[in-house]
Image 1 (tube, rainbow over the protein chains, first blue to last red):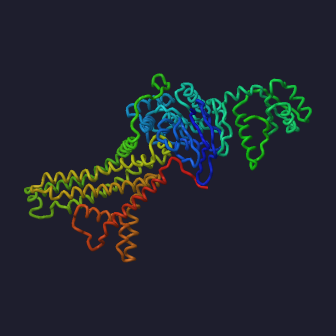
Image 2: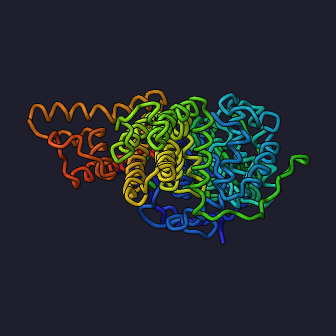
Length: 321
Length: 290
């Protein structure tokens, strides 16, 4: 059973279709939710939490129906919202205890867990201070602490590194890695920062304009694209891409003359130069590297563009999604 | 998790039943409300009339004390009219207390955008409002039906003649009248606080919601020469209701004489309007149309 299962999920808000026919199953231990702004990431999270009613299809979280089992889902989920969301008039420990009690912990256990959670995220020394006096990084951490305190089975983090300076971001990423390594809970991490997802997740769901652009196992993707070449080219790159596909490569073109090629083992870099020579293209820079999440993301975006003729035509060709 | 090891451990202990979660909100709400010295000050102030009433009851029930202080006057007769006056006084103190407490219960949550995080826990929007309602209703009980019942019980005990059995209707009227006022006041307080994020303005808005329609109703009544405008006058409507519930003499008779169904209808309509406001405002996420 997947952590999250979507079956033709459709959500309409304010007369607009925000999520359109999402179908897929997420099984990863840490699932990244990627997409440009407005792709529907937060709407999907809100729907999973029962804040929005699906207008079609359904979604299951930990095997529970998001439409009918809202309370049981919320019991099993820890949620860290994207924006500031706390009670500034309360001390850190009181706030986390309050949230833990709302999740069903008895008062004494809630207090104990609140202290532990605050120490765990690194707010132990400031736990008696009012939250309104916390810095932005501390506010992010206390949202994480309250999401962890009741020991959820699924932790949903909506833009956890939002607004953090590099040090605080690294600290948050390390915390997420530690939680993942501990292994007792699944995570769904929404972000538009590829690097965050790349560092913390093993599976990624990419949304674009309310549709699933890709569901991908990041590790498998990396393994399958070892012979991956990135080039900067001038000249007739379109013909070059066509030529490379003709000889069995997967090839995608991006803005600024960037071309990415995945070559079969039988071919070598010499074939690249020959193809460039034959098609009148010039290779200005060439780099062999592993596939990155950025590539998976860009490819998904390109394919999404190709799928809809009304959108600007994508230039990617031949690469698998 | 462990404070010493700073690592994470899952929670596998017992959990409380889902139906008790609004009580958590109520408990924290009460704590928030009564954590203010102003709340305590107002509550003490609200009990002062009860102390005065208690002294008056003592004088009325003690022939020697009565003779010494007021002579043979019948001013200190303890009856329906006396308790109607006490109820009215306490209920208006309850308005002041509600205007101070209600914004503290909700405005903090709205001001800091705490609703998404609160409602992401296993508590529904109804549960949230119920929890806050319980906190406010309990706070208002402290200055309304509880001290009033104490006064009634004291009168039953101190009266030199058999009094209790023939005046049980007063006890019912006190509890029922205060309960209706608490429900209406709590709903108005929560609705206004959910609408106005700023606490001070919300406090002022509560008085405005009670008294501005009264003024409009009075103007309408004067212009149209009808009594129905008085239905917008909450103080008058409630006085009529309390008077009938306690069985006090009709002090307003002939001036308005609003029918009971109309009074009940107005109160139900006001309550439903408040529920509609709460339904619109207490949401984890707002949906922007367009």
